[in-house]
Image (cartoon, one colour):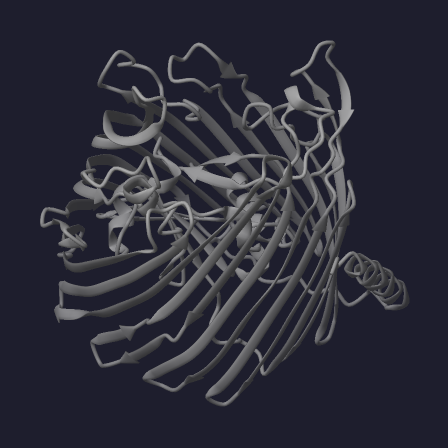
Length: 630
């Protein structure tokens, strides 16, 4: 059943809230307390980029893919508004980057990667990018890095309701709700979202001659999902049950050179997560147990090509963690993790199972201005195992400057598709092996009540051997091999300025620059940059707040990306700018906020992936109602 009627409910909600705004007395504004919050956590085991709240607010009606485009060093490979979306950190592949939601790994065990559009931002309260070595604190951290997603467990209010409605260009509609309550030690929280997009935007088709403007067709996107958590929290104990489910239906449009042809390709994705986290706090130790079950199904249909495939991946996961103080300056973290993955896929030789284990030992020693970290983590997958995954890090604080350096070794196991794809899988594949090195500094130039200026620079070097790549064989078929040795090096720089200009006026700017070289060092293509790895990325998030008004601007520059391994063909660089103006109305326990956004302000004509058109300038309007009873 088509859920188009959802957009009419969204429109009615928007009209109702507008009327509510008009009828209220708006003379009782109170400025929320302005706080300086670091967007980067630096430590001797690497550093973590926290996505700013401004980005979370702007993309509350979007997906994880939309959020990660606004800030941080990750490159998002987007196949268009209705297509899939994956990410790369420091030149890594999508399967070398892990995505976690409250410690539950979301990477599909068959594909090895995760579609970022399957997680709505509405479900998130915090998102972090763990670059390089920082990922090793997770059970099976990615060679390139991790994305860590979190939702707030305990509601801060006794009863709360949030309702959000959004309408935008190209028949884009979003409706969402969040209901939570807390009674002494018990709490419940439920979130729901519905998204609908037709994506019939105009684009310049350069894939056909003559070049002319066209309207995209067969590009609709529908998604609905919910997240529910029931829990109990006392002084020393926390237990909960969390359930997340999203259902995504999408049409796949033709590529530019095939414009005008009949297309019937569709894809349906279902994601289910069930988790039962338990935590107990002792005097100096915290004990955690996080069993979870995930199920992902992907149905791809192309009637014109007589294709109707279904792949179901299931995973039983568990993480047991004990973390605490041994002495005043020494802390110990012990973590045991296991996964049992099984896949039902008619493209694999048989239904396959996969068992993975890891055992992390982390010791931290922090005398005065020094910090030392040692990690050791044996990992096992079926008959493959590695006893040499480690991290060694050191940092020292000198007045306002913290200097840090870290070295590590990591591995990645082949996916089930790599090993067992019918007629092409290679069961003799070896695990990928990576050596990672980082050196940098965190300089707090100014830090006072009215002004904060901070700069972080990091240089990195990675050497990845046995890189798995699918290549053509003599029989004409493609098969995976440990084909490459890849060298990655570069620079990541962040500048963060936050200032309180007057009692009612605040301004902040966060800039992220990433220079990434990722080159193949083996074979005839030695020295070439990997495809879809831009050497230069630059992102800016600006926020100007006056009383209850807020003006935010998001700018991103993406450099050239090669689309062929011989580096003969590339996509040109592009600049994108989004602007959002918002206003909040407070009435005792009630709050209503309205925002208007202009996306791709300068109507940039660009492609993120070759022959996949992206929208030009477009608009959206969002209304949100919040009720909180403390």
